[in-house]
Amino acid sequence: MKTYNLNDLLQKHVCAMTGEEFIFLMSNLSVLSDKSINHSTDDEKPRHLVYGIKGIADIFGCSIPTANRIKRSGIIDGAITQVGRKIVIDADLALELAAKAKKQGKEVCA
Image 1 (cartoon, rainbow, N blue to C red):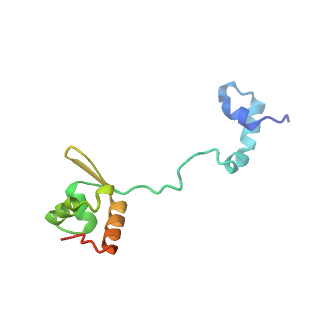
Image 2 (tube, helix red, strand yellow):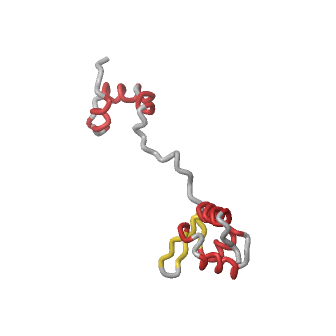
Image 3 (cartoon, one colour):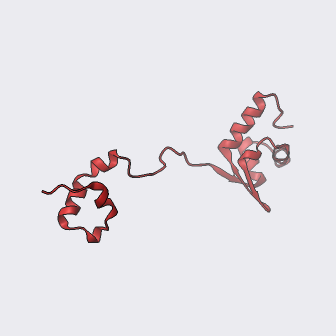
């Protein structure tokens, strides 16, 4: 069996490969996975998003008025994306920011 350059084969369309090239490529799948050619983001954990003031209330286990105060305080601004009336909150980041604020002696829930 002839030896082929893996990078050249990866750039080639499957329909343009000969049978021998395709078999060579398939037999070297373990080499391909070792080179981390698959650029997936397995390291990234999925973000837990919540929506609206109700979402903030759910994150912190508080009432809607208290959730409004938390939002207005600016402590979790880094976790909030707001366009018009639509509010999206990264729950994990909001909890992290609130914990940091509490360590610094700032009051999260007034």
